Every structure is written in structure tokens, then in C-alpha cells.
Image 1 (cartoon, one colour):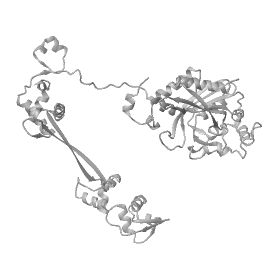
Image 2: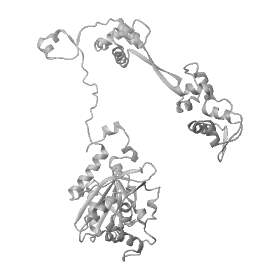
Image 3: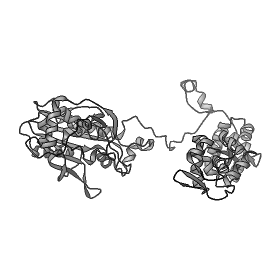
Image 4: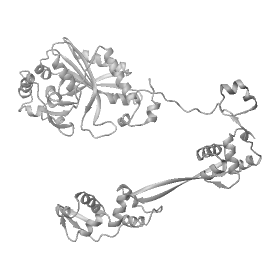
Length: 485
């Protein structure tokens, strides 16, 4: 009787209807219980949870021809049409005279896949008699109407958008022995109060009415408040730390000249970083800053009196070519050139682009945190202190620096932090003091401390991710459950 007491009126109606027949479809159950299909099925699912009925689902799959599939079912597949025309070897140009170029492209791929032809240079040579394939048989059968039982070759036809797959779900509702026992004892459908209102309370009508039981142990639906994306929160945190340390944030263009991206940083024009595997080169060019052309050229070719330079001939044409910036150093070096006589503490946290293969630790576009300090008397020791303070504020207790090499800084280091959970040191960027070959051609006479830190790598450590791509995926569950602090 306990179960009967806890049944809603709709559940009672559905249970009484189920007791009159062995099985019901959703439509039949709605009619028998005098409820809508949605309401009757909702009650049926609640009864199923209580073990009073069963809901059996079956999925029926059918296959139909698309409009394009109907066309090829009548006149044959592109590869069959081309194959039928190949009485002898033909050149590709001759074949394109017989058929539309787009159709030839489709046909050649499938001709090779089915081993009906071989291609030698520009000649298409039929190999052997092409037997009718399973995919062609399927198209022939589907001309007569939809089918449910069909061969494996239909997968290729679906990929080619010649056949579409349709799934239809059907349900049957059956009363259980426990449900029959309760229905046999009799169920009384009486008016019940679902929600108390001020009128019901003040009138006292609730005293003689049945109030629907409320289960205080039923789990409530979780509520997720709006919040900033975890990656953006981390970027904001980094920005705030440098602002609190007295730095000024600067911005710059995504499209940069090779001059500011490479030449101003004393990277030789034949450096591998300029090749296509690393840099996104654009077909456009731009003007060069006239006042820096001669000193930069002299520094590259002859060393400007302080080194041997790179030798060879420095080309203005190469320097004019535009690229997607490969690092935000292109922004900070231009800022320094525009402010050569004043003390500078500046940073740029923005996106950079490189021609990288996508894998768990690399993407073609990524965020970089670039910073510079320029002033009289600043030293390498100041650089290490500044970066140590930053990483401590980011929550990394142990920081160390390993000697490194970069074309435009000397000395150079790679900051590392110790990750307790991984039991190892992790490198997070590069830093150093700008070489005089970089600063002197731009009129900068004071020492410059510079660094470029990988934002996404810090994000992976802070957020416990093993794959960088997770930062950019539309995983709403991960976003909802990510902690704000």
C-alpha cells in the first residue's frame, strides 16, 4: 500500500489503463488514460522506476536514396560511367573533354580505390573487367524503395551523400506483476494539491484535500552560475600580476613586417624560423621605417662595429614581406624603438601564430606573455628576480633557471618550475638580456631585460590538463564544473 499512497493521479490513470491490456504503444496508452502522449509517457517512466511497468525500446534503421543517389541509381556511378568509356588508355585531358572536370575528379578516386584502373603519368589505363560491386547492387535495390537490411558497402554510399540513414525509435509499455497487484486492489483518483497557494492556505481548503507527497531526498537539478572561461581567468590573473608589479600593458598588430618580427631582433634572413614550416607568410608587403633601415642593414652585414654580423647581403625586399607574428616580441621591440630614451616596464599578453602540427602540446596559434624592462643599471640578476616573483605569485613555489640560447638575447635562460604532482621540472618560456646588435640600431642605449612565457603551458599545469586542445573544445560539462578560485 505504500506504493499506492505515493502514486500521483496521472500515474494511477496510466496504471489502471495498463492493467486492461498486455501491451500499449505510447499513442494507445495516451488514449486509454485520457492524457496527452507526453504526460502518459512521463507517468509511465515514473512507474517503471518503481517497478510497476516496463518500457521496451526498439530502434528501426532504414536507408533511402538522396536526390543525388537517385540520379546515379538511374545512370550509374561516376566511376562506372568513366570505366565504360575507357575502351583504351586515355590521357586526363582527353577524359575531361568527355566528362565534367568535377565528375572526373570523383571518378578517378574511386577507380583507383576499386583497382579498376592504374595511372601512369597523365594516362589512365583500364586494368581489368570491372565487376558490378556491392555498392552498385545497393543503389539498384534502393530504387524500389527504402530498405532496413543492407550490406556493408552502404557506409561508403552514406559518406558519398548518395544514401541517407534514418533511425526510428518505438516503445512498448507493459505492466509488471507488481503493477497488476496494486491495480487489482483498486486505485482512487481524487483531487490533489500539487502546490500550495495563499488562497488555498487562507481558505482552509487544504484541510480536506489530498496533498501530493514531497520527497525531500530527491536530488535537485544542479545550477551552474555564469563564469569566465578558465583559460581567460588565467590570462586575467597573469595580466593583474604584472599590473600590480608596475608594468604597462601594450598591444600590437597580428600582421607584422618581417622587419619587426625578425630583422629588428637580429635574426638572419636565412634563419630556419622564416621558412614555411614555422611561419605563416603572407603575400603582402609594407613600408619599412626609414630611420632604421641603414643601421639594421649594417648590423646584419658587418656587425655595426661591435660584432662580425651575419655576413652576406641584407635585403629590404625580404624585410618588407608581411607575416602573422610568430611571437609578441615584434610588439615589444617596436614599443622600445618608439620610446628609446625613457625607462620602460611593459608587457604584452596576446596571440602568436606558427606553422605547427596539432598535437597534445602544440597548436598553430597560442597565447604568449611578453615582457621588457629597460632602464639604467638593470641587470641579469634583476631579470631573474622579476620572473621568480611572477611565478611565485602564480602559485609555483620552486623556480629555477637553466642556461638557454636565443638569437636576440645574451645571456639567455629558460625558467623552470617544479611540479610536485609530476615529480619533475617543467620549462615555461625563455628570457634574457637583449644583445646590443638588437638595441643599438634602434637607438636604444640602456640595457633591456626581456622574456617570453608560454601561457597555455601554464594553463595546462594549473588546470591539470594533459592535452592542450582541451582548452579550446566546447566541453560544457568541463566549463560548468571548473572551479572559479
